[in-house]
Image (cartoon, rainbow, N blue to C red; front, side, top):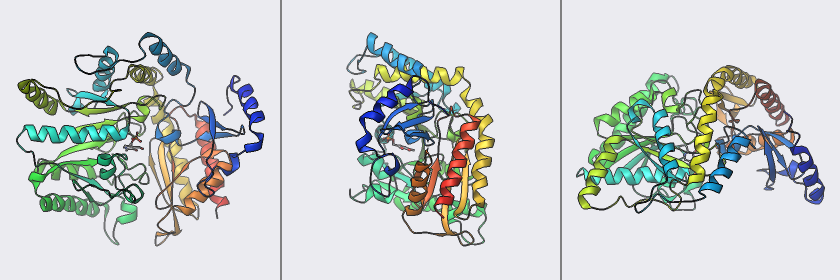
Length: 458
Ligand code: PLP
């Protein structure tokens, strides 16, 4: 858990420079003071006062390989030296982007093996791309009115006007007049929170599938393009779907020609112990978005994976019209991002990170479930190296504290004081999602500190 030797002198220097503005203990949701992080190494980050934290949220669920990984740094630097920028636009192509697209497709779930990749810079824009491709594809096949998107309460898909509409977290919608009218939301799949008295998990799944069918029929199947879902809801509270949920939802979608978009922005590349979260939860997705861990967060990059059938239809149509599919960014297929992603995937395979996650997951989950006994914890849940505890006023009735995240924020603050970064989510959930490179000792330290923080908050 110690920083590398090269980091120490730098930190000492920083401590010297910042003695008058120390914020380490007050970086908090409660005080409104930001935590000022200035350095990182491995699974550790350091604030401007030199205080060390285990970063048990991988930043924003993204730094799979932790901080300061020399090979990623070198991949970026050497790509910058060779070709710092070029674009994939107007008859130009960047070969390293093609190489990365091939690599991603080789790792993709079976049904997307023949697919194509559209690169962007964020999870939000990957989901916007999916909407544009879906709309365009439906127009090409003579269904221009088939545009509505159905997503779930508690889902997080980004903040742009399209992805922010598909998101269903009140604070994302509140000041913006969202969602825009092309989106409808159905229930959150949290059986713990929304299962009814006496309802079995299987009954809950049946109820949610019936609700989805009702929503499609209400809009008209000829109006509904897609069902968007994260394999597990991340920012909504690390909510795992109940058994059989995705197959049941898929069956409904297939009945009405509604395509499924899997948002793997958090779960992609090993987080759940499977390469893709959709494999872990039997979610067959026609389209798949990923980002974050793809570059371990070192540089921005997202990938919208498009199925072959949609790509071929769009290609044939654009050829017919002698035009292009009018979508793309200045930084689509940015060579530096692609170089870092290729290196990340190389390290991921070489260092057998998937196997490592699978080996560490039992300890992580055992320590996580161990928190269930704590008086504040109503529910502990997780998979692979991601998890959360939901804090309640009363365990028996699952009565929440309030609609906000005040108690979770308190726990997060106490965790910070103990040198641990975790995150408060809506409904008083505290989430844990460390870099995939953590050791067993790190995992134990994370849960020891979190247990302490929960007790501090009693
Ligand atoms: N989709 C999911 C599942 C996410 O968790 C996020 C961000 O946390 C996004 C999309 C949006 O990604 P970005 O913040 O890169 O736009």
